[in-house]
Image (cartoon, rainbow, N blue to C red):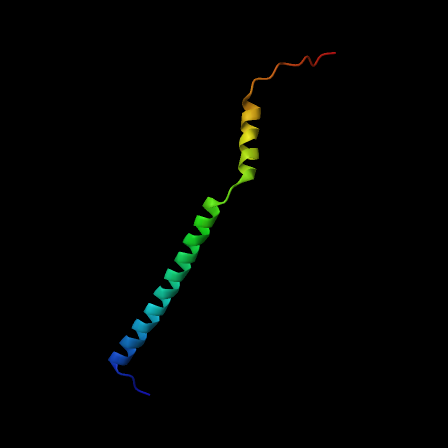
Length: 66
């Protein structure tokens, strides 16, 4: 089978367009996923931010000698 340069070019162009379309779709899905993650409430962050606050508060020294 012999292919003309125009047929090869059009096949390459169609393949590149298909890959770019897939990349666009995946990027859009990734953006939606990030948007969903950033808008959801995160109760575990309250707990995580309380730990450094608790650790940074001054404590009274204990007498360890008995």
